[in-house]
Structure formats: structure tokens, C-alpha cells
Amino acid sequence: MARMREFGTTIFAEMSALAARTGSINLGQGFPDTDGPAAMLDRAVSAIRGGSNQYPPGPGVPELRQAVSEHRKAHYGLDYDPDGEILVTVGATEAIAASILALCEPGEEVIAFEPYYDSYAASVALAGAVLRPVTLRPVEGRFTFDPAELRAAVGPRTRVILVNSPHNPTGTVFTRAELEEIALLCREHDLTAVTDEVYEHLTFDGVEHVPLATLPGMRDRTVMISSAGKTFSVTGWKTGWVCAPPPLVRAVQTVKQFLTFTAAAPWQLAVAHALRHELEWVSRLRADLESKRDRLTAGLSAAGFEVYRPSGTYFVQTDIRPLGFSDGLALTRELPSLAGVVAIPTQVFYARPERGSHFVRFAFCKKDEVIDEAVNRLARLG
Ligand code: PMP
Ligand code: GLN
Image 1 (cartoon, rainbow, N blue to C red):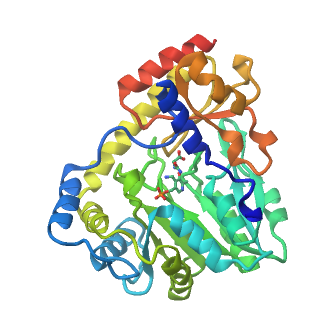
Image 2 (image 1 turned 180 degrees about the horizontal axis):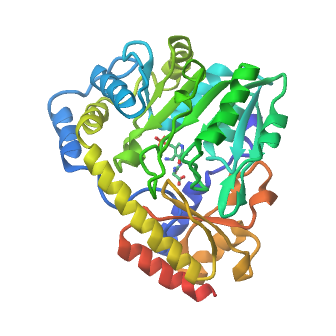
């Protein structure tokens, strides 16, 4: 299909296959190598044993919609009605695709900050819409955008702005001031924001995630998306959700029902349990990840990479030029033979790959000994 021709195989599939084939340490695809809370896992088993094995309602199992509603209220002071303002999806990936398909006519434009998670460009292409990238660049060690560049990207055909914070792959958590710039444009130009908040709980150094929907005038023009994968270390459960006012949720659900109809039942019951009872576990995960972040950033710096210290997510963005390399895609394809490690070339997250050719992303959601071994191997590059 012409619209999808340029997409081929995702970089995550390519790099995980490379890791398996070469027996390398996989710091590429972002998935943890330890399980989520035991009681949540037990709840999934008891849901299956207890007969929750048929189609759940289209919008999602009521217990999960109720738990999402309570969680949004408790954490962010946001009110979403579980009946009509919350939709359970097959991960955040389906939520993003269904939102873009629901909101954009062919030819309309979607603004996204590059580098961006790879499904954004594919979802925009599926909708026949046009992606307008705004580049995040390092300023004093942290990736951010130029408000003038953001403003210049808005035109008469702009319909949606996609906002991912905490941001994969740079680790930036947008400040309230940055979000205010975005909100201002949304209000001025009547744009809908689609927010990808899958790393909402994974922030470090006391930095708190601020949902765009909490800013003045934004709740009613935001499709807020999150998922259980990162928060509870169950990336294979593919359980996500959308929170938005009724007309937006209805539009997204109209698309969703013909993509997957509904999301798998047992995980929904287990995630409902987790949102209600496992947030202390998540606090420990966050502290653990912070120390893993420190471990990997120190190791990569010692190995000669320029490291951008992330304030959130699973990932460290690095610049490979101090090591004498300039092409991240070429380096990551060679890295298994050079060092027995797999990483992700960030250039594939750019609409204009030349802007990111010198960046490589490493994941730290791994056991300490795995990080240490990877760092020892990478030290050979210098
Ligand atoms: N958005 C971002 C920024 C991600 O890193 C990921 C990968 N987990 C997703 C969305 C997809 O989430 P899910 O697995 O819930 O579809
Ligand atoms: N979100 C994860 C990452 O960025 C993996 C996603 C995927 O495999 N599609 O690494």
C-alpha cells in the first residue's frame, strides 16, 4: 500500500531480532526484564480461571473504567465519567492510531515533536493526514522546542497536536511553561491535543508529570492517553485507555470498534486492581529506575558517549560523535559485533533523519547486572 510503503519493519522488531540472533544484550526495545506486582499477576490468573474470557463491553470492563476515573481524579484532580468519557484500548498504540484516524480528514495536518515514537508517523499516514514535525533540540543538556518554531508549524489545515511527555526517546518531561505554550496555540487555533502519557509515573529527581489536560481550557480539547505497560511492567498486556469529553471519546470509539472491537478482558480486571492497590509498588519502581538511570548514564559517559540525562521514561539519549561515529543506524547495526549490545538509532524517530543521525538510545529498564555488563562491553568502543 503506497501510504505505508516507507514504513517497512519497525526498528524495535529489527533490533530485538538482531539481539536474539547475535546473543547480544538488548538495551534497544523498551521492556523491563522483571515482572510487575505479584497480586496483579494473580488477579489476571483468577480473572481467567473465574471465567472472564468472553468479549467485554466495547468501551472496556466497567471496573477498569472506574479505576481509571478514580486514578485521574486522585493524581491530577481531573474528572472523567467512567460511562462516556473513558475508553479502554489495546495499548496506547491503538489509542493513538484510533484518535488520529478519528480526528483527521485526509490532507489535514498533525504536529508532532521529533524525534517521535514511530507509530505516530505511521498513524498519520494511515489517516492520509500530513505530519508537521517540530524538532526538539538539546539546550543545556535537555531536549526542548523553540516556541517560534512550534508557532510557525501551525497553519490553516492543522487539526491535531500530538504531545508525548515524559518523552520517548529524549527523556524530557515538559515543564508547565512548555505545556502552556502548547495550550495557548491549541486555544488560539482551535486544535485538539492528543497526549501520550504512557510514562506518566516514571519521572525522576522529584520532577512531576503535568498532564496537558490540567491546563486552563484544555480538558475539553484533549484526548489523554495512557497505558498499563510501563506503569506496571506489563508491556505485553497491551492495555491502554483514552480519557476525553464525550464527543471525542465517541469519535475515537467509532474507529476503535472496527480496529479491534474491544480489548482483552482478563488484563483489564488485573489492571483495575493495580490502579487501585499497587501505586506504592509503582513508587518503588520509579526509585529503582532512577538508580538504573544513574547507573547507565554514568557507564555510558565513562565509555565516551555524550549523555543526555533523562528526567523520565526508560531511555537515555546519547550523542555518538565523541566516540568518532556519526551514523547511529550504521553503528547500531554494527554494535552486536563491536560490543555485543543492541541499541536504537534515534534517527528513525525523525521526519528528517539527518537531524538525529548522531543520536543513539539505550534502555535502562533492566537488571543492574545486565546494565553493568552492557556498560563494560561498550567501554571497548573508546
Ligand atoms: N507511546 C510511547 C511514547 C511509547 O514509548 C510506547 C511504547 N510502550 C507506546 C506509546 C506504546 O504503548 P502500548 O504498549 O501501551 O501500546
Ligand atoms: N515503546 C517501546 C520502545 O520505545 C517499544 C515499543 C515497540 O516495540 N513497538 O522501545
